[in-house]
Image 1 (cartoon, rainbow, N blue to C red):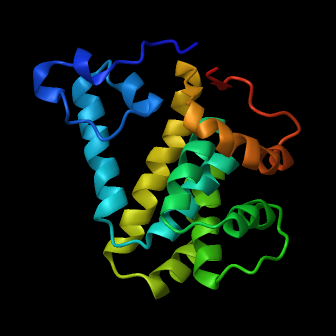
Image 2: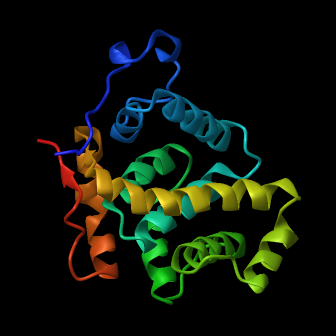
Length: 197
């Protein structure tokens, strides 16, 4: 059970009703602080709909962060989003393979994006060599548009377990389909995140 209540839109102060980006449990938990939920949603809308980074690459990077951080919530939530932005099941399998150092058929830029996500999750910063690969393919705004959500996603992966967020029914089938890939990263599936019945 979540440590904070899931706030419904109807229970928000008037100025925030109908202003939030989704009814995902993370948004509903953040809605205990309505202004934070609104500002977080504003950034999410920018990242998803206005950023210059290719949506498939962006979602691959965020899924990589969830995978590397072993965050069941972030991993499954962004698989659902990623599939709607062009991420394929082969791409998802490639995340596990790239992380393990196995060869994949991903294009070079996707490999660089995944490496950047791993470096930001496992360390603090993108290595100079990886950043140079991104700069060769991106304009000045795109590295910022990629690295900023990766940093916030990494922070989220550390925050959501503390709130014991649960997966929604709509995410349950995604977990069933792709949890084995997360198991390859760790011998035990993360237990602090559970599924709603």
